[in-house]
Length: 607
Image (cartoon, rainbow, N blue to C red; front, side, top):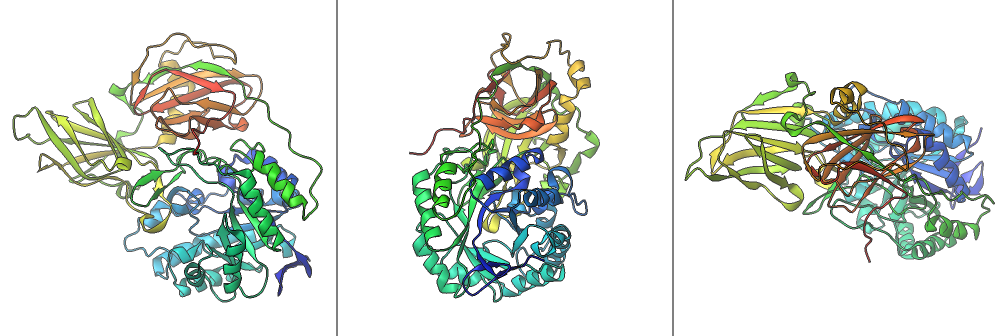
């Protein structure tokens, strides 16, 4: 039986000093058919451990419907880590932040009336106990003492930045130990005196999260963790992007120097991230520190492996530093060739006059005030709200339609004619509308806040709603499931019903002339053939704002405001033969063509 413990000065593996060289690799941000490749590349950089969060809302988006299969197969992921001869660190939260939707907490949980998040509140503790028990059913038999790879389990996540409820932390420890977790337990906080004190608990090993001033921050950590090994459990080697920003990058040389400082001090390290991956589907989070900023689909993070799993300059810079202290494999990953370049003509298969025609009208809900996504129990990204307008005062030519708040973006139409948008990121809450009889607002939830007190806030149209001060009441709300919508549009039956007669495009083929602009909301579809599965990059710069799916797999969101200009298409999503693409455009398309380009373009970089 192998034993992993914490000694007076070191982590110990069967009684011998052991240093952890780990990399963060979130299984939920990587296609499962690519897990083994990314894990292997971590070992080739010189790492001995893979670290991952567990995202509660990824496994249980609907209460009681737990799923640990396919892309959610944590057991398989950990088994692949073990097969590569590496260890694993598991961080189950229940709160994870991670720029992930709602910080990993399910919306059904945060919508519960009176719920006390991240503290000793009975309803919250009862729910998280059920969740952790399910996670530990997977993790416990895969601990190192039982022949598996898991050497550490983390309690909560940067809790000192949020609260200081020690009873809450003790309950998490109790649940963890009761579930059979015997490996050492850790906490993580930014190395400030206040956060380390608030987030720590006797019996838990403290670790730090930082990306610079390593010597200073390790000293602060040592002041709170008097004995045992020092560990930077999140070494921030890059950063994330949000819609409307630039693409954030950091210096490989500067990061390598900080890594050298960590290793020369005898500390262990976990790269956050080793491989960022992608916020596929509707999984991106958002930040709100005075302004709402949704995270991009790409979570490239300027990491040692880029979004498509290829080594970057940081990979080799970090590998060189590690080689100063430890043996590294001779093998290095091969450089990937450019991706295929080709165009696919797209045809509208559902025009704005009949948008969302395959949604089930029976799911529409009527209420005096517009119901929120939470009140609808809706876990997807779109709801269409409609109401009759009251008689407008004044000359009747126009009026101001005002909302308490729009979360997060609304496309406003009057009598079926689009009149404008309201964007939360710009603090917009009112719009001038023409005289009309009926107003429609298509609201997109663009990502839930993943940090601080706004976690769990309600989405949709937040009342009151008024036109020139007169209340607008009597709303109908139609929830729209984006993934079901994409699957319906991409099906052969829908494509044929729409009259698609073009043969599938092949790499190297061009697109025929098309109308210059198509207004949304609209679904456009096309098809293309491949000789074999391969990674692709889809250029979205000619489109406005929406979603893309290929073969029913929802790649994620795109937005013309950037910074991201391409969507990554993993090789396992496509196949030899015909493949189908659908674009769900909410704004407008200037060129109804899908351009596949040779490499990723994540936008202009900060200087």
